[in-house]
Image (cartoon, rainbow, N blue to C red; front, side, top):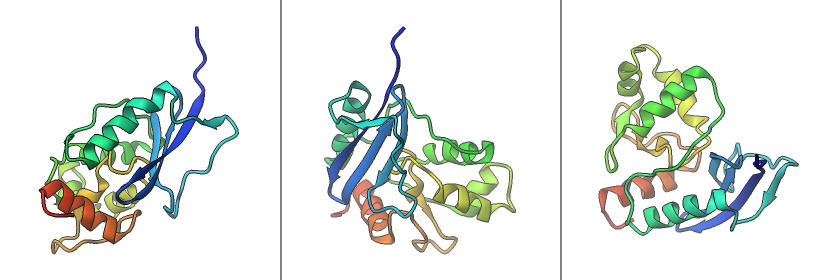
Length: 165
């Protein structure tokens, strides 16, 4: 039996540097390096962009930014509460190029009065872009909070809609 070691890498993107971390089996973090809740490095994680668990995620993210990939197929292992996992699973079902509201997502989860809780779970998403929290907008359609910054959210939505990002 082989042991799995946590590894991380930094990926240059059109939106800045992404921090990508794997527990050796699945991705646990994909966050912008300047993210307010940036995942601190643990002592068991080592920098190695060529590590097997990071090669495919880096390839798929590069393809996404090159408009060659619309859906990710990667093993994910975000840590969070049961409710957060439900929200993150629902986010993953929002089609590429589409957007929905916090309220609509709450209704889809059977919790119509919990739009704020959906917003909090959305903000705690440790897998930016892969779990597309940028596809959530305010009830009016206005761009609202995004942990990576509103300008990045605007860019990602335009990128997915095929507009000049």
